[in-house]
Length: 598
Image (cartoon, rainbow, N blue to C red; front, side):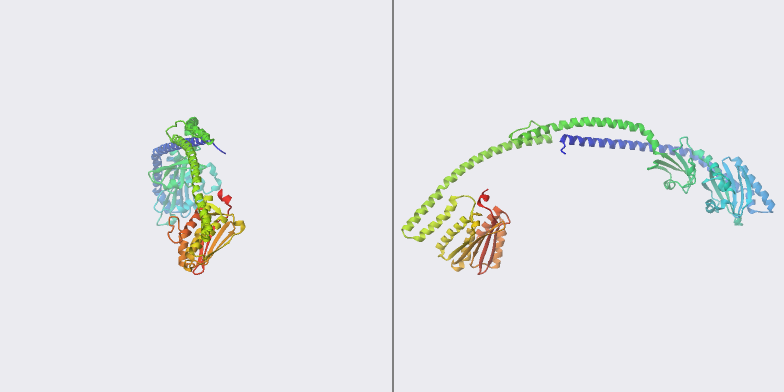
């Protein structure tokens, strides 16, 4: 389907402008999103810095209370298990009371337990307290928490995701969904003198008490804040389903603070901050859709600006393209007039740009065509004058022929028969030139010319040369380049019969081979050596500039004329042997004289 240049240019300009506007809008949108995310990161980090002191105070206070309980003489007496069984029983009752007093003083404690290596359990919670010897049948001894936490240097460890049922002797009787989540603080007490009485001191803190310190009023169903320990486990979170799970590796592995963005089904920005103790990290997940709400107004403005800009681009594009193409349309109309024969038509002055340059070139071309036609008419007139002069010049050879004919009759009257024959042969040769000045003649005329030529050579060298011709009647009127066979016969006489006192036979055979016309000129002269034959073939294959002089110049000229008129496929081929003669084959396309004349 043909599309006008105006439509093509308009579509190109519109496509470019639309692409630029679209890319600009996307760029602005992304920049605004980046600014909003950066501000969100800064505000979140500022909030984390504000709550950092509260978290540190909470952690330090809990660890200090745990240290005081751990260093209490009563706890040591229970672990050392001195005195009778009754005395030990009273000591465990006192220890339970110590646990209750500690919980009453610090409301964020949910429960405190002591688990010894030999299976004794002493615990207290908000609803009950007990001491018993289970022999490690208590469910706690099968938990991962007990299996991994045995640091002999009494280092503190915090774990999240625990519930009261994880520390009771009958966990099946407790509904986990109705109990609070716990933040577990563990200290291991080593007894070198009696390893069986080494124990784990467990402090369960209400996780909600810790979450209240960092929970912001902006936290809701979509924004989640959580606390991560040194191993990347979530120990406290506003979303309780995440407690005890592993956080993103980028949160735990990165020092200091920062943020990153995740895309996909849950597109979100994650801001993380390392607390001063290097043990905990705060992180907050903010959905990207919250930023989209903030930029919704900006998006509406960008859409409005884009629509208005596209409208202006369309109007200005059509106006500009029309102004640009107006001179080109005028040039197209003038070219159509020139095509229909209105020679010399010119376009009006064009603007100074490429289209104006094109118009100037058109004017020059149109004027040049007009001048060329005028010159051709003048040339044709001069050619007709030259043809008249050529016709006039033919009077001279005609007069020469009549004069030779008169001399021939005088020789006959004087009984000088050989002189008359020689003059008749010379007249026959001249007749081919003044009768027709065309480049091509028939095979019949060419061979007649050869007969006259051989007669003159016999008069010169003693009647020792015989000529044999074989010409099918169907090929007698075939077209052949004039004087293309005579140089071959002349070469045979001068070089082939020179050492034989100019005695020998020349055979001319005309035949066809497919679309080729072949004229073979064979002699039984001296022939030539292989070296001389190769030199001659090399001369024939040389270009016009390298054409040889001297010996065999007639063969080279004939070969060049044939290739000049017919093409490189045609020309002469030569075969010869010493003392066995030479064969020269003339190759040309087969055509009638009328066909060649056209």
